Amino acid sequence: MKKQLVAFVCSVLCCTAGLAQYAEVYPSNWWVGMKWNKVQLMLYNDYDEFNQETVRITYPGVKIEKVHKVENGSYIFVDVSIAATAKPGNVSIELISGGKAHVVSWPLKSRTPGKGTTFAQGINSSDFIYLLMPDRFSNGDPSNDRIEGMKDQTLDRDSIYHRHGGDFAGIINHLDYLKDLGVTALWMTPVIENDMPERTEHGYAFTNHYKIEPRFGGAKMYKMLGQELHKRGMKLVQDAVYNHVGVHHFTVTDPPMKDWLHQWPSFTQTTYKDQPLYDPYAAEVDKRKMLDGWFTRHMPDLNQDNPFVANYLIQHALWCVEEFGVDGWRIDTYPYNDLDFMNRCNKALMDEYPKMTMFGETWVHGVAAQAYFTRNKTNTAFKSNLPSVTDFQTNLYGIIPALTEKFGWTEGVNKLYSTLAGDYLYENPMNNVNFLDNHDKSRIYSVVNEDLDKQKMGIGWLLTTRGIPQMYYGTEVLMKGHTNPDGWVRLDFPGGWKGDSKSAFTKDGLDDREIEAQEWTKKIANYRKSSSAIKTGKLMQYVPDDGLYVYFRYDGKQTVMCIMNTSDKAKTVEFSKYPEMTKGIKSVKNITGEQPTEGDSFLVEPKQMMILELVK
Image (cartoon, rainbow, N blue to C red; front, side, top):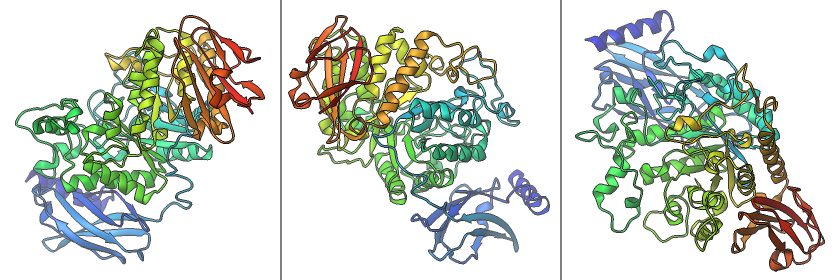
Protein backbone atom coordinates (compact mmCIF):
# COMPACT_ATOMS: atom_id res chain seq x y z
CA MET A 1 0.00 0.00 0.00
CA LYS A 2 2.87 2.36 0.86
CA LYS A 3 4.50 1.87 -2.54
CA GLN A 4 1.15 2.40 -4.27
CA LEU A 5 0.75 5.72 -2.47
CA VAL A 6 4.24 6.78 -3.53
CA ALA A 7 3.46 5.88 -7.14
CA PHE A 8 0.24 7.90 -7.01
CA VAL A 9 2.03 10.94 -5.62
CA CYS A 10 4.75 10.68 -8.27
CA SER A 11 2.10 10.52 -10.97
CA VAL A 12 0.34 13.60 -9.64
CA LEU A 13 3.58 15.56 -9.43
CA CYS A 14 4.52 14.57 -12.95
CA CYS A 15 1.16 15.60 -14.38
CA THR A 16 0.52 18.78 -12.39
CA ALA A 17 3.90 20.31 -11.69
CA GLY A 18 6.34 18.61 -14.07
CA LEU A 19 8.70 17.99 -11.18
CA ALA A 20 9.38 14.31 -11.71
CA GLN A 21 8.85 11.52 -14.19
CA TYR A 22 6.50 8.70 -13.31
CA ALA A 23 9.39 6.26 -13.58
CA GLU A 24 13.15 6.54 -13.69
CA VAL A 25 14.77 5.29 -16.91
CA TYR A 26 18.33 3.98 -17.26
CA PRO A 27 20.19 4.75 -19.44
CA SER A 28 18.69 8.22 -19.10
CA ASN A 29 19.06 8.87 -22.84
CA TRP A 30 20.63 7.41 -25.99
CA TRP A 31 21.74 8.51 -29.45
CA VAL A 32 20.81 7.82 -33.04
CA GLY A 33 23.54 6.34 -35.21
CA MET A 34 25.17 4.23 -32.49
CA LYS A 35 26.47 0.75 -33.29
CA TRP A 36 24.98 -0.30 -29.94
CA ASN A 37 21.45 0.21 -31.25
CA LYS A 38 19.73 -2.45 -29.18
CA VAL A 39 19.34 -0.88 -25.76
CA GLN A 40 17.97 -2.50 -22.62
CA LEU A 41 16.05 0.07 -20.61
CA MET A 42 15.68 -0.30 -16.86
CA LEU A 43 12.44 1.34 -15.69
CA TYR A 44 12.08 1.87 -11.96
CA ASN A 45 9.19 3.03 -9.81
CA ASP A 46 9.00 2.40 -6.06
CA TYR A 47 5.65 0.64 -6.44
CA ASP A 48 5.02 -3.09 -5.83
CA GLU A 49 2.94 -3.71 -8.94
CA PHE A 50 4.74 -1.43 -11.34
CA ASN A 51 5.82 -4.38 -13.49
CA GLN A 52 2.18 -5.27 -14.15
CA GLU A 53 1.83 -2.20 -16.35
CA THR A 54 1.85 -2.50 -20.12
CA VAL A 55 4.69 -0.75 -21.91
CA ARG A 56 4.15 0.91 -25.27
CA ILE A 57 6.39 3.03 -27.53
CA THR A 58 5.10 4.66 -30.70
CA TYR A 59 8.10 6.52 -32.08
CA PRO A 60 9.36 6.16 -35.67
CA GLY A 61 12.39 3.91 -35.77
CA VAL A 62 12.19 2.80 -32.11
CA LYS A 63 10.69 -0.62 -31.50
CA ILE A 64 10.09 -2.70 -28.40
CA GLU A 65 11.67 -6.12 -28.89
CA LYS A 66 10.90 -7.65 -25.51
CA VAL A 67 9.58 -6.73 -22.07
CA HIS A 68 11.08 -8.47 -19.02
CA LYS A 69 9.04 -8.51 -15.82
CA VAL A 70 11.51 -9.49 -13.13
CA GLU A 71 10.85 -10.68 -9.58
CA ASN A 72 10.93 -7.22 -7.99
CA GLY A 73 7.68 -5.55 -9.01
CA SER A 74 9.30 -2.10 -8.96
CA TYR A 75 11.32 -2.82 -12.12
CA ILE A 76 10.57 -3.40 -15.78
CA PHE A 77 13.35 -4.14 -18.29
CA VAL A 78 12.52 -3.24 -21.89
CA ASP A 79 14.64 -4.23 -24.89
CA VAL A 80 14.33 -1.62 -27.64
CA SER A 81 15.92 -1.42 -31.07
CA ILE A 82 16.80 1.88 -32.71
CA ALA A 83 16.71 1.84 -36.49
CA ALA A 84 19.17 3.73 -38.68
CA THR A 85 16.21 5.84 -39.84
CA ALA A 86 15.34 7.05 -36.33
CA LYS A 87 15.57 10.80 -35.77
CA PRO A 88 16.57 12.68 -32.62
CA GLY A 89 13.69 13.61 -30.33
CA ASN A 90 11.92 12.69 -27.11
CA VAL A 91 10.67 9.10 -27.15
CA SER A 92 7.44 8.76 -25.20
CA ILE A 93 7.28 5.56 -23.16
CA GLU A 94 3.69 4.83 -22.19
CA LEU A 95 3.03 2.80 -19.04
CA ILE A 96 -0.57 1.65 -19.06
CA SER A 97 -2.54 0.31 -16.11
CA GLY A 98 -6.30 0.19 -15.46
CA GLY A 99 -6.97 2.11 -18.63
CA LYS A 100 -4.73 4.99 -17.56
CA ALA A 101 -1.44 5.84 -19.26
CA HIS A 102 1.56 7.50 -17.67
CA VAL A 103 4.09 8.93 -20.11
CA VAL A 104 7.82 8.87 -19.46
CA SER A 105 10.11 10.86 -21.74
CA TRP A 106 13.32 9.25 -22.99
CA PRO A 107 15.56 11.58 -25.06
CA LEU A 108 17.11 10.26 -28.23
CA LYS A 109 19.95 12.63 -29.11
CA SER A 110 22.03 13.35 -32.18
CA ARG A 111 25.69 12.45 -31.80
CA THR A 112 28.32 15.12 -31.17
CA PRO A 113 29.67 16.61 -34.43
CA GLY A 114 33.24 15.54 -35.06
CA LYS A 115 32.92 12.35 -33.02
CA GLY A 116 36.11 10.35 -33.16
CA THR A 117 38.33 13.40 -33.56
CA THR A 118 37.35 15.53 -30.57
CA PHE A 119 37.04 12.69 -28.04
CA ALA A 120 37.43 8.92 -27.62
CA GLN A 121 40.99 9.48 -28.83
CA GLY A 122 42.53 6.82 -26.64
CA ILE A 123 45.56 7.04 -24.38
CA ASN A 124 48.94 5.96 -25.73
CA SER A 125 52.67 6.18 -25.08
CA SER A 126 52.76 9.75 -26.40
CA ASP A 127 50.69 10.84 -23.41
CA PHE A 128 51.61 11.93 -19.90
CA ILE A 129 48.74 11.21 -17.48
CA TYR A 130 48.16 13.26 -14.33
CA LEU A 131 46.08 11.57 -11.63
CA LEU A 132 44.24 13.69 -9.09
CA MET A 133 41.42 13.41 -6.57
CA PRO A 134 38.84 16.11 -7.37
CA ASP A 135 37.96 16.66 -3.70
CA ARG A 136 41.62 17.31 -2.86
CA PHE A 137 42.97 19.35 -5.80
CA SER A 138 41.28 22.75 -5.84
CA ASN A 139 38.02 24.33 -4.66
CA GLY A 140 36.77 26.58 -7.44
CA ASP A 141 33.13 26.81 -6.32
CA PRO A 142 32.47 26.83 -2.55
CA SER A 143 28.71 26.89 -3.18
CA ASN A 144 28.74 23.13 -3.93
CA ASP A 145 30.82 22.12 -0.90
CA ARG A 146 27.72 20.73 0.76
CA ILE A 147 24.56 19.60 -1.04
CA GLU A 148 21.32 19.59 0.93
CA GLY A 149 19.84 16.13 1.31
CA MET A 150 23.07 14.19 0.74
CA LYS A 151 24.09 11.85 3.53
CA ASP A 152 27.64 13.17 4.01
CA GLN A 153 27.58 16.78 5.17
CA THR A 154 31.17 16.90 6.36
CA LEU A 155 33.51 19.70 5.31
CA ASP A 156 36.72 19.68 7.30
CA ARG A 157 40.14 20.18 5.72
CA ASP A 158 41.80 19.18 8.99
CA SER A 159 40.40 15.66 8.60
CA ILE A 160 42.04 13.18 6.25
CA TYR A 161 38.69 11.44 5.68
CA HIS A 162 36.09 14.20 5.47
CA ARG A 163 35.30 16.17 2.34
CA HIS A 164 37.48 19.18 1.57
CA GLY A 165 35.48 20.85 -1.21
CA GLY A 166 37.59 20.38 -4.33
CA ASP A 167 35.61 20.34 -7.58
CA PHE A 168 35.62 20.52 -11.38
CA ALA A 169 35.68 24.32 -11.34
CA GLY A 170 38.91 24.24 -9.37
CA ILE A 171 40.45 21.82 -11.85
CA ILE A 172 39.37 23.93 -14.83
CA ASN A 173 40.96 26.98 -13.21
CA HIS A 174 44.33 25.22 -13.23
CA LEU A 175 44.36 23.29 -16.50
CA ASP A 176 46.99 25.67 -17.87
CA TYR A 177 49.26 24.73 -14.96
CA LEU A 178 48.94 21.06 -15.96
CA LYS A 179 49.53 21.80 -19.62
CA ASP A 180 52.64 23.89 -18.83
CA LEU A 181 53.88 21.01 -16.66
CA GLY A 182 53.78 18.79 -19.76
CA VAL A 183 50.62 16.85 -18.94
CA THR A 184 48.52 15.64 -21.89
CA ALA A 185 45.80 13.58 -20.16
CA LEU A 186 43.85 13.99 -16.92
CA TRP A 187 42.66 11.01 -14.89
CA MET A 188 40.50 11.67 -11.85
CA THR A 189 39.30 9.25 -9.22
CA PRO A 190 35.58 8.52 -9.81
CA VAL A 191 33.20 11.36 -10.57
CA ILE A 192 29.93 9.38 -10.29
CA GLU A 193 27.54 10.20 -7.44
CA ASN A 194 28.61 8.74 -4.08
CA ASP A 195 25.74 9.47 -1.72
CA MET A 196 27.22 7.47 1.14
CA PRO A 197 27.19 8.60 4.79
CA GLU A 198 31.00 8.69 5.14
CA ARG A 199 34.30 8.36 3.26
CA THR A 200 32.85 9.89 0.11
CA GLU A 201 36.02 11.75 -0.80
CA HIS A 202 37.46 8.83 -2.80
CA GLY A 203 34.42 8.14 -4.97
CA TYR A 204 34.63 4.34 -5.36
CA ALA A 205 31.18 3.46 -3.97
CA PHE A 206 28.66 4.59 -6.60
CA THR A 207 25.06 5.22 -5.58
CA ASN A 208 23.63 6.18 -8.98
CA HIS A 209 25.55 5.51 -12.18
CA TYR A 210 23.65 8.14 -14.14
CA LYS A 211 24.36 11.08 -11.83
CA ILE A 212 27.64 12.97 -11.73
CA GLU A 213 28.76 13.90 -8.22
CA PRO A 214 26.95 17.21 -7.45
CA ARG A 215 29.61 18.28 -4.96
CA PHE A 216 32.06 18.37 -7.88
CA GLY A 217 29.66 20.49 -9.94
CA GLY A 218 27.48 17.84 -11.56
CA ALA A 219 27.10 16.85 -15.20
CA LYS A 220 27.23 20.42 -16.55
CA MET A 221 30.65 21.13 -15.07
CA TYR A 222 31.97 17.68 -15.98
CA LYS A 223 31.09 18.36 -19.62
CA MET A 224 32.77 21.75 -19.37
CA LEU A 225 35.92 20.15 -17.96
CA GLY A 226 36.07 17.74 -20.91
CA GLN A 227 35.58 20.61 -23.34
CA GLU A 228 38.28 22.73 -21.69
CA LEU A 229 40.72 19.82 -21.82
CA HIS A 230 40.05 19.26 -25.51
CA LYS A 231 40.47 22.97 -26.27
CA ARG A 232 43.99 22.64 -24.92
CA GLY A 233 44.74 19.48 -26.88
CA MET A 234 44.49 17.39 -23.70
CA LYS A 235 42.50 14.24 -22.96
CA LEU A 236 39.99 13.06 -20.37
CA VAL A 237 40.32 9.69 -18.62
CA GLN A 238 37.36 8.39 -16.60
CA ASP A 239 37.72 6.01 -13.67
CA ALA A 240 35.33 3.07 -14.13
CA VAL A 241 34.14 0.75 -11.37
CA TYR A 242 32.39 -2.40 -12.61
CA ASN A 243 33.05 -4.76 -9.72
CA HIS A 244 31.03 -3.15 -6.96
CA VAL A 245 28.78 -0.28 -5.90
CA GLY A 246 28.03 1.43 -2.59
CA VAL A 247 25.54 -0.11 -0.14
CA HIS A 248 23.27 2.91 -0.69
CA HIS A 249 22.98 2.35 -4.45
CA PHE A 250 19.30 2.04 -5.30
CA THR A 251 19.85 -1.42 -6.85
CA VAL A 252 21.24 -2.56 -3.49
CA THR A 253 18.59 -1.04 -1.23
CA ASP A 254 15.88 -2.27 -3.65
CA PRO A 255 17.48 -4.91 -5.92
CA PRO A 256 15.76 -5.79 -9.21
CA MET A 257 16.29 -9.49 -8.54
CA LYS A 258 17.89 -11.71 -5.93
CA ASP A 259 20.98 -12.43 -8.00
CA TRP A 260 21.71 -8.80 -8.94
CA LEU A 261 24.48 -9.05 -6.35
CA HIS A 262 26.65 -11.95 -5.35
CA GLN A 263 24.90 -13.28 -2.26
CA TRP A 264 26.40 -15.38 0.52
CA PRO A 265 24.83 -17.00 3.62
CA SER A 266 26.87 -14.54 5.69
CA PHE A 267 29.18 -11.68 4.81
CA THR A 268 32.05 -13.02 2.69
CA GLN A 269 34.88 -10.75 1.68
CA THR A 270 37.06 -11.33 -1.35
CA THR A 271 40.35 -13.04 -0.55
CA TYR A 272 42.23 -10.43 -2.63
CA LYS A 273 44.18 -13.41 -4.03
CA ASP A 274 44.37 -13.30 -7.83
CA GLN A 275 46.35 -16.55 -8.21
CA PRO A 276 43.34 -18.93 -8.38
CA LEU A 277 42.21 -17.19 -11.58
CA TYR A 278 45.18 -18.59 -13.53
CA ASP A 279 46.63 -21.25 -11.21
CA PRO A 280 46.36 -24.67 -12.97
CA TYR A 281 46.04 -26.30 -9.54
CA ALA A 282 43.49 -23.88 -8.05
CA ALA A 283 40.42 -24.94 -6.09
CA GLU A 284 37.11 -23.65 -7.46
CA VAL A 285 36.06 -22.34 -4.05
CA ASP A 286 39.14 -20.09 -3.93
CA LYS A 287 38.32 -18.71 -7.36
CA ARG A 288 34.74 -18.00 -6.33
CA LYS A 289 35.75 -16.23 -3.13
CA MET A 290 38.18 -14.06 -5.08
CA LEU A 291 35.66 -13.06 -7.75
CA ASP A 292 32.35 -13.07 -5.87
CA GLY A 293 33.37 -11.98 -2.38
CA TRP A 294 32.53 -8.40 -1.51
CA PHE A 295 35.33 -5.86 -1.68
CA THR A 296 34.25 -4.43 1.68
CA ARG A 297 31.03 -4.49 3.70
CA HIS A 298 30.18 -1.12 2.19
CA MET A 299 30.86 -2.20 -1.41
CA PRO A 300 28.57 -5.05 -2.52
CA ASP A 301 29.78 -7.22 -5.38
CA LEU A 302 27.85 -7.00 -8.66
CA ASN A 303 26.92 -10.26 -10.38
CA GLN A 304 28.21 -9.72 -13.91
CA ASP A 305 27.00 -13.21 -14.91
CA ASN A 306 23.49 -11.80 -14.68
CA PRO A 307 22.77 -10.51 -18.22
CA PHE A 308 20.72 -7.58 -16.89
CA VAL A 309 23.65 -6.44 -14.73
CA ALA A 310 26.04 -6.86 -17.65
CA ASN A 311 23.86 -4.76 -19.97
CA TYR A 312 23.43 -2.10 -17.29
CA LEU A 313 27.20 -1.74 -16.86
CA ILE A 314 28.16 -1.91 -20.54
CA GLN A 315 25.55 0.63 -21.55
CA HIS A 316 26.65 2.95 -18.78
CA ALA A 317 30.23 2.82 -20.09
CA LEU A 318 29.09 3.70 -23.62
CA TRP A 319 26.80 6.42 -22.26
CA CYS A 320 29.63 8.11 -20.34
CA VAL A 321 31.98 8.22 -23.32
CA GLU A 322 29.33 9.71 -25.62
CA GLU A 323 27.75 12.04 -23.06
CA PHE A 324 30.93 13.53 -21.60
CA GLY A 325 33.52 13.17 -24.35
CA VAL A 326 35.76 10.67 -22.57
CA ASP A 327 39.04 9.71 -24.27
CA GLY A 328 40.33 6.87 -22.09
CA TRP A 329 39.02 4.48 -19.48
CA ARG A 330 40.78 3.38 -16.29
CA ILE A 331 39.18 0.25 -14.81
CA ASP A 332 39.24 -0.20 -11.06
CA THR A 333 40.02 -3.57 -9.41
CA TYR A 334 40.31 -5.33 -12.77
CA PRO A 335 41.07 -8.90 -11.57
CA TYR A 336 38.00 -8.93 -9.30
CA ASN A 337 35.61 -8.67 -12.26
CA ASP A 338 34.28 -11.58 -14.27
CA LEU A 339 36.90 -11.65 -17.02
CA ASP A 340 34.57 -12.87 -19.77
CA PHE A 341 32.28 -9.95 -18.94
CA MET A 342 35.24 -7.59 -19.11
CA ASN A 343 36.14 -8.84 -22.58
CA ARG A 344 32.57 -8.15 -23.72
CA CYS A 345 32.57 -4.71 -22.17
CA ASN A 346 35.97 -3.78 -23.58
CA LYS A 347 34.88 -4.96 -27.03
CA ALA A 348 31.68 -2.90 -26.90
CA LEU A 349 33.69 0.24 -26.19
CA MET A 350 36.30 -0.48 -28.85
CA ASP A 351 33.66 -1.38 -31.45
CA GLU A 352 31.86 1.90 -30.86
CA TYR A 353 35.05 3.96 -30.52
CA PRO A 354 37.90 2.35 -32.52
CA LYS A 355 40.58 4.63 -31.02
CA MET A 356 39.31 4.19 -27.48
CA THR A 357 41.74 2.59 -25.03
CA MET A 358 41.43 1.40 -21.47
CA PHE A 359 43.86 0.38 -18.77
CA GLY A 360 43.03 -1.88 -15.85
CA GLU A 361 44.22 -1.70 -12.27
CA THR A 362 46.17 -4.94 -11.80
CA TRP A 363 47.62 -4.84 -8.30
CA VAL A 364 49.07 -8.33 -8.62
CA HIS A 365 52.54 -9.77 -8.14
CA GLY A 366 54.80 -10.89 -10.95
CA VAL A 367 54.99 -10.02 -14.64
CA ALA A 368 53.34 -13.30 -15.66
CA ALA A 369 50.40 -12.66 -13.32
CA GLN A 370 49.94 -9.14 -14.65
CA ALA A 371 50.27 -10.21 -18.29
CA TYR A 372 47.39 -12.66 -17.80
CA PHE A 373 44.94 -9.76 -17.46
CA THR A 374 45.97 -7.90 -20.62
CA ARG A 375 46.77 -8.76 -24.22
CA ASN A 376 49.66 -11.18 -24.03
CA LYS A 377 51.71 -13.79 -25.86
CA THR A 378 50.99 -16.66 -23.48
CA ASN A 379 49.15 -19.85 -24.32
CA THR A 380 46.29 -19.87 -21.82
CA ALA A 381 42.64 -20.89 -22.07
CA PHE A 382 41.47 -17.36 -21.28
CA LYS A 383 42.73 -14.55 -23.50
CA SER A 384 42.17 -10.97 -22.37
CA ASN A 385 41.46 -8.21 -24.86
CA LEU A 386 42.38 -5.44 -22.40
CA PRO A 387 44.82 -3.12 -24.21
CA SER A 388 46.71 -1.89 -21.16
CA VAL A 389 47.33 -2.20 -17.42
CA THR A 390 48.63 -0.02 -14.62
CA ASP A 391 52.10 -1.51 -14.33
CA PHE A 392 52.42 -2.49 -10.68
CA GLN A 393 55.40 -4.66 -11.60
CA THR A 394 57.65 -1.81 -12.75
CA ASN A 395 56.56 -0.04 -9.57
CA LEU A 396 56.68 -2.71 -6.83
CA TYR A 397 59.51 -4.76 -8.33
CA GLY A 398 61.19 -2.11 -10.45
CA ILE A 399 61.63 1.53 -9.68
CA ILE A 400 60.93 1.29 -5.91
CA PRO A 401 63.76 -1.20 -5.19
CA ALA A 402 65.96 0.65 -7.68
CA LEU A 403 65.64 3.77 -5.55
CA THR A 404 65.61 2.19 -2.09
CA GLU A 405 67.77 -0.96 -2.15
CA LYS A 406 71.52 -1.37 -2.35
CA PHE A 407 72.76 -2.91 -5.56
CA GLY A 408 73.11 -6.69 -5.64
CA TRP A 409 72.88 -9.67 -7.97
CA THR A 410 69.07 -9.53 -7.78
CA GLU A 411 68.63 -6.39 -5.66
CA GLY A 412 68.37 -2.69 -6.30
CA VAL A 413 68.25 -1.50 -9.87
CA ASN A 414 68.77 -5.08 -11.05
CA LYS A 415 65.11 -5.66 -10.12
CA LEU A 416 64.05 -2.89 -12.49
CA TYR A 417 66.18 -4.38 -15.26
CA SER A 418 64.82 -7.90 -14.64
CA THR A 419 61.20 -6.76 -14.49
CA LEU A 420 61.46 -5.00 -17.84
CA ALA A 421 63.16 -8.10 -19.26
CA GLY A 422 59.82 -9.86 -18.72
CA ASP A 423 58.13 -7.62 -21.29
CA TYR A 424 58.26 -10.49 -23.79
CA LEU A 425 55.03 -11.75 -22.19
CA TYR A 426 53.00 -8.71 -23.28
CA GLU A 427 51.57 -8.17 -26.72
CA ASN A 428 52.53 -4.50 -26.49
CA PRO A 429 54.33 -3.36 -23.32
CA MET A 430 54.35 0.21 -24.67
CA ASN A 431 50.70 0.37 -23.60
CA ASN A 432 51.50 -0.25 -19.94
CA VAL A 433 50.95 2.69 -17.57
CA ASN A 434 53.95 3.30 -15.29
CA PHE A 435 53.77 5.22 -12.01
CA LEU A 436 55.75 6.13 -8.91
CA ASP A 437 52.78 6.41 -6.56
CA ASN A 438 49.02 6.79 -6.58
CA HIS A 439 46.01 7.26 -4.28
CA ASP A 440 46.49 3.81 -2.72
CA LYS A 441 50.27 3.81 -2.25
CA SER A 442 52.69 5.75 -0.11
CA ARG A 443 53.99 8.93 -1.67
CA ILE A 444 57.27 8.32 -3.47
CA TYR A 445 58.97 11.21 -1.65
CA SER A 446 58.27 9.47 1.66
CA VAL A 447 59.29 6.07 0.24
CA VAL A 448 62.74 7.45 -0.66
CA ASN A 449 63.04 9.07 2.81
CA GLU A 450 62.63 12.58 1.39
CA ASP A 451 65.77 12.30 -0.71
CA LEU A 452 65.38 14.87 -3.49
CA ASP A 453 68.00 13.26 -5.72
CA LYS A 454 66.20 9.92 -5.60
CA GLN A 455 62.87 11.63 -6.25
CA LYS A 456 64.29 13.34 -9.33
CA MET A 457 65.79 10.08 -10.55
CA GLY A 458 62.41 8.41 -10.20
CA ILE A 459 60.66 11.18 -12.13
CA GLY A 460 63.36 11.04 -14.81
CA TRP A 461 62.85 7.29 -15.21
CA LEU A 462 59.05 7.65 -15.26
CA LEU A 463 59.18 10.13 -18.13
CA THR A 464 61.71 8.23 -20.26
CA THR A 465 61.05 4.50 -19.86
CA ARG A 466 58.84 2.51 -22.20
CA GLY A 467 55.08 2.87 -21.83
CA ILE A 468 52.76 5.61 -20.60
CA PRO A 469 53.84 7.74 -17.61
CA GLN A 470 51.30 8.57 -14.90
CA MET A 471 52.08 11.09 -12.17
CA TYR A 472 50.06 11.46 -8.96
CA TYR A 473 49.09 15.00 -8.07
CA GLY A 474 51.71 16.76 -5.97
CA THR A 475 54.58 14.39 -6.77
CA GLU A 476 56.10 17.25 -8.75
CA VAL A 477 56.23 19.42 -5.58
CA LEU A 478 57.33 16.71 -3.14
CA MET A 479 54.01 16.00 -1.43
CA LYS A 480 54.63 13.28 1.13
CA GLY A 481 52.75 10.75 3.25
CA HIS A 482 52.52 7.04 4.02
CA THR A 483 49.44 4.84 3.67
CA ASN A 484 47.82 3.07 6.63
CA PRO A 485 45.70 5.05 6.81
CA ASP A 486 45.33 6.02 3.15
CA GLY A 487 44.10 9.53 3.94
CA TRP A 488 47.68 10.65 4.50
CA VAL A 489 48.47 10.20 0.80
CA ARG A 490 45.35 12.13 -0.22
CA LEU A 491 46.05 15.54 1.24
CA ASP A 492 45.21 18.87 -0.40
CA PHE A 493 47.25 20.16 -3.31
CA PRO A 494 49.05 23.35 -2.17
CA GLY A 495 47.36 26.46 -3.50
CA GLY A 496 44.05 24.85 -4.35
CA TRP A 497 42.16 26.73 -1.63
CA LYS A 498 41.84 30.43 -0.97
CA GLY A 499 44.17 31.41 1.85
CA ASP A 500 46.65 28.52 1.40
CA SER A 501 50.05 29.51 2.73
CA LYS A 502 51.82 28.15 -0.34
CA SER A 503 50.85 27.47 -3.92
CA ALA A 504 52.30 25.06 -6.44
CA PHE A 505 50.47 27.02 -9.13
CA THR A 506 52.29 30.31 -8.44
CA LYS A 507 55.33 28.96 -6.52
CA ASP A 508 54.44 31.27 -3.63
CA GLY A 509 55.69 29.71 -0.41
CA LEU A 510 57.40 26.76 -2.10
CA ASP A 511 60.89 26.03 -0.84
CA ASP A 512 63.90 25.59 -3.11
CA ARG A 513 63.65 21.80 -3.12
CA GLU A 514 59.97 21.83 -4.12
CA ILE A 515 60.66 24.28 -6.93
CA GLU A 516 63.62 22.21 -8.10
CA ALA A 517 61.46 19.06 -8.33
CA GLN A 518 58.71 20.94 -10.13
CA GLU A 519 61.09 22.45 -12.67
CA TRP A 520 62.79 19.08 -13.22
CA THR A 521 59.41 17.50 -13.99
CA LYS A 522 58.45 20.33 -16.30
CA LYS A 523 61.76 20.20 -18.19
CA ILE A 524 61.68 16.46 -18.91
CA ALA A 525 57.93 16.23 -19.54
CA ASN A 526 58.01 19.03 -22.10
CA TYR A 527 61.09 17.59 -23.77
CA ARG A 528 59.21 14.29 -23.94
CA LYS A 529 56.44 15.98 -25.93
CA SER A 530 58.83 16.59 -28.83
CA SER A 531 60.87 13.39 -28.53
CA SER A 532 59.73 10.72 -30.96
CA ALA A 533 62.23 8.25 -29.48
CA ILE A 534 60.80 8.53 -25.97
CA LYS A 535 57.14 8.70 -27.00
CA THR A 536 57.01 5.87 -29.50
CA GLY A 537 60.54 4.51 -29.97
CA LYS A 538 62.10 1.25 -28.89
CA LEU A 539 63.90 0.49 -25.64
CA MET A 540 67.35 -1.03 -25.29
CA GLN A 541 68.66 -1.61 -21.77
CA TYR A 542 72.10 -2.75 -20.63
CA VAL A 543 72.80 -5.03 -17.67
CA PRO A 544 73.32 -2.76 -14.63
CA ASP A 545 76.91 -2.47 -13.44
CA ASP A 546 77.44 -1.79 -9.74
CA GLY A 547 74.37 0.42 -9.50
CA LEU A 548 74.80 2.11 -12.88
CA TYR A 549 71.83 1.51 -15.18
CA VAL A 550 71.97 2.69 -18.79
CA TYR A 551 69.16 2.43 -21.29
CA PHE A 552 68.32 3.97 -24.64
CA ARG A 553 65.12 5.09 -26.33
CA TYR A 554 65.51 5.20 -30.07
CA ASP A 555 63.84 5.23 -33.47
CA GLY A 556 64.90 6.11 -37.02
CA LYS A 557 65.01 9.82 -36.19
CA GLN A 558 66.45 10.08 -32.70
CA THR A 559 68.52 8.34 -30.01
CA VAL A 560 68.18 9.27 -26.32
CA MET A 561 70.59 7.89 -23.72
CA CYS A 562 69.32 7.62 -20.12
CA ILE A 563 71.80 7.07 -17.30
CA MET A 564 70.78 6.30 -13.71
CA ASN A 565 73.51 6.15 -11.11
CA THR A 566 71.72 4.53 -8.17
CA SER A 567 74.93 3.98 -6.17
CA ASP A 568 76.46 6.25 -3.53
CA LYS A 569 79.64 6.69 -5.57
CA ALA A 570 80.39 8.63 -8.75
CA LYS A 571 80.55 6.47 -11.88
CA THR A 572 82.43 6.87 -15.13
CA VAL A 573 80.36 6.34 -18.26
CA GLU A 574 82.07 5.51 -21.56
CA PHE A 575 80.15 5.77 -24.82
CA SER A 576 82.25 2.97 -26.29
CA LYS A 577 80.64 0.47 -23.89
CA TYR A 578 77.33 0.86 -25.70
CA PRO A 579 78.38 0.47 -29.36
CA GLU A 580 74.97 -0.49 -30.77
CA MET A 581 73.58 2.87 -29.73
CA THR A 582 76.55 5.25 -29.65
CA LYS A 583 78.39 4.44 -32.87
CA GLY A 584 78.66 7.46 -35.12
CA ILE A 585 77.90 10.14 -32.50
CA LYS A 586 78.75 13.64 -33.71
CA SER A 587 77.52 15.64 -30.74
CA VAL A 588 75.59 15.32 -27.50
CA LYS A 589 72.78 17.47 -26.16
CA ASN A 590 72.44 17.25 -22.39
CA ILE A 591 68.72 17.54 -21.63
CA THR A 592 69.07 17.50 -17.87
CA GLY A 593 72.17 19.68 -17.89
CA GLU A 594 73.82 18.60 -14.65
CA GLN A 595 77.10 17.24 -16.01
CA PRO A 596 79.49 18.04 -18.88
CA THR A 597 79.56 15.36 -21.58
CA GLU A 598 82.69 16.17 -23.56
CA GLY A 599 84.81 13.31 -24.94
CA ASP A 600 84.15 9.58 -24.87
CA SER A 601 83.85 9.35 -21.08
CA PHE A 602 82.29 11.46 -18.37
CA LEU A 603 81.40 11.26 -14.71
CA VAL A 604 77.93 10.81 -13.25
CA GLU A 605 77.61 11.79 -9.63
CA PRO A 606 75.86 9.55 -7.03
CA LYS A 607 72.07 9.39 -7.17
CA GLN A 608 71.96 11.41 -10.37
CA MET A 609 70.22 10.85 -13.68
CA MET A 610 71.35 12.18 -17.04
CA ILE A 611 69.29 12.28 -20.22
CA LEU A 612 71.35 12.81 -23.36
CA GLU A 613 70.18 13.28 -26.91
CA LEU A 614 72.79 11.77 -29.21
CA VAL A 615 73.22 13.49 -32.54
CA LYS A 616 74.61 11.24 -35.25
